[in-house]
Length: 462
Image (tube, rainbow, N blue to C red; front, side):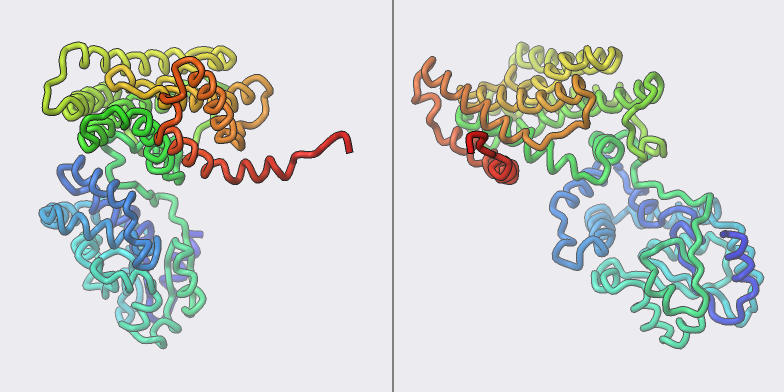
């Protein structure tokens, strides 16, 4: 408990090691530094791009992730460090753990505390200057050396101060990442401070993609795994065979997807808000209750409008979009907005049918401005049905939402539609490279579903 830890700090006769983030400083220094970057939109999308590339996979895994995040800001937005130095002192004085600070100031002068942190030297030094400690020893990481974050605090403290220093020390930390130091030091104290808060960078700004990745689907890599690898890929495969310029088509379609998803994300946020206020058992993530992330309907429309216009300009290049292009896309955005608004305000049984419309709009809204092939239309229709069936079962049976067979369902629907369209419009429109790409992609995704299905098949006549 905090009171026991404070008493132990005051009574300890020997070296004292103190963690910084969410311990002596009640927030996270790295997140606060990244949050300082301006323009925030540029910094946010640079970091999102970095998340997609995930270069830390080759430098030691997730332990080195923050090193890469800080590097990209220092390299591409170098003015951020100057802004941080002007801001850090104020943050330090405001968010210092006053109880712990007072206890550290009362220790034997021979044992001035040593601050040891996974934070980075350039970031933590101006921050610590505002905490009120007199000339503390600081052991922090170098953002340009992935090995330091990979090896962790114990290796750096031992290298700097010696193993005997660690063995005689008292350690105050909140993190289980410090388990090896806790096991090595003389007096290990792991404390969760009630006032400590982890506040993610840019959580005070409305930026598209934050709500879906941090609140609605936290920790699922939803933007990459679902929006890009499924939604965007289906849009692309359904239309690429009719594109005159594949590069502008890919970029323009990506901008339209971004435009669409800013309002689809609004639907998620509105759904959670309505559930929290009007449902007895709303399905809300733990992150929703933290209340860290802001959402703005006017800004969502602003992002959707700007990215939609840019998408149309790129798609029509070198020609210019006509008025009907803008009106058609505005109608698509209005359709998703209004359908989600109604969906979020009606009973759960009525939602069954509206969900089918939401799924159709999600997979097919772009067809109002981009032509699709016959095979593409069949694939999009099959996708809509395969995603609606689990929801139908969920709402009508009261069972858990299970998506164990969505890819098999898609393959079945696509095959049936393909055969019917083959007889209706001719097989030359169906047997195409795009059709084989769709089949290969979904057969690969369905490989485990198919294997499970094959194992469960039993003959009843034997």
